[in-house]
Image 1 (cartoon, helix red, strand yellow):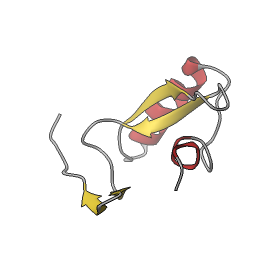
Image 2 (tube, helix red, strand yellow):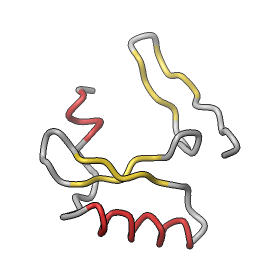
Image 3 (cartoon, rainbow, N blue to C red):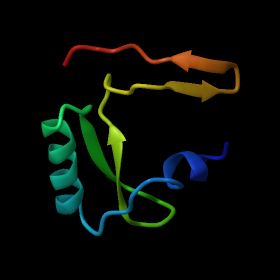
Length: 73
């Protein structure tokens, strides 16, 4: 998986950070994980990414999958 695929493909592009933060608050209010907004260097739109310690999946490295620990904020 390339860096482009990880960072951009399959993610919803938001026109502004304000719109992204609004959606992140909505997801959190529905019981979902915490998200941060970031500007994508490929499409230049704003995407949502899991906040540190709130990822719910395994991240793949060249050495295989690495489980992410759930950290308390």
